[in-house]
Image (cartoon, rainbow, N blue to C red; front, side):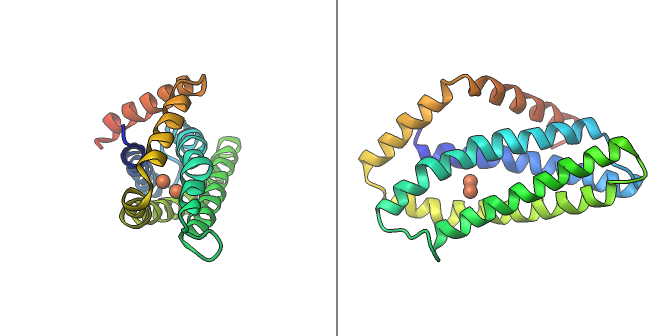
Amino acid sequence: MNPIKRLISEHETIIDALQVLSKICDASATACQIANPAHADQLVAFFRLYADAWHHGKEEDQLFPALEQIGISREGGPIGVMLIEHDQGREFVRGMGQSLTTFKDDSDKGTTDFIRYSRGFIQLLTQHIDKENKVLFTMAEKHLPKSTLNELEVLFDQKASTDASTDIKKICEAVELLKTIYGI
Ligand SMILES: [Fe+2]
Ligand SMILES: [Fe+2]
C-alpha cells in the first residue's frame, strides 16, 4: 500500500479509538467516576502502543526525515510542530494512565483528572491528524520522489512483519470490540 495512504488509514483507526474515549469521558462525567476502567486501560494501552510507538514511530523515524531531505523544515516548520504535538500527546496519555491508577487505588479520586487529560488528548490529536492529512501528507504525496515513497513502503512492510505487529493486531482487535460496545 502507498505509505502515505497507510498512515492515513492508521489515522482512521486512531480517530475511532478517540471516539470511544469520548464516550467513556461522557459516561464518566455523568457517573462522577471512571466508567469502565478496564476499557479505559485498553485505550491507554492502544494510544501508547499503536498511536505512539507504531504510528508516530513511523512518522518520526521514517516519514519526517524523508520530508526534511526535500527541504521541509524541522526547526520552526511543520515537522517541528508535529514533533511538539507528539510530545504533548505523550504527556496527556501519561496523565490518563496516572489518573486511572489513582482511581483504582481510591475510587473517590482520579476521575476529574482522567476526563481532563482525555479530553485534552482528544482535542490535540484530532487537530494534529487533521493537519497531517490536509497539509503535511498532501505535501508528502505531491513532492516526495517515487523512489522515496517506494523505500517507505518497504520499511513499513518490514515493520509489519516484526514481532511487534502481533501486539499491534491484538490491541487493534480490542479497539474493534470497544467500537462495537460503544456503538462507533
Ligand atoms: Fe503525527
Ligand atoms: Fe499521524
